[in-house]
Image (cartoon, rainbow, N blue to C red; front, side):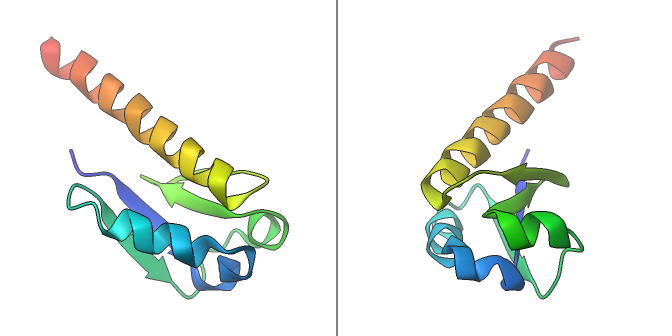
Length: 85
């Protein structure tokens, strides 16, 4: 299961570009940058990204990185749970 992490170009003013570049280094992630993800409220207020289509937002870029990794772990655990059945 390869998580898809999507970033909005308009959100880069929060410093998310550095995080995006770090995540791109992981060959297990699909990292995509779009011109607009249509979440203007989150985009204006917080650093955010979509992880498998779910909004992940945090007050800082460092916290966003932590939240993204936590979301990926949560998704992997669910995937493992369902694949055991």
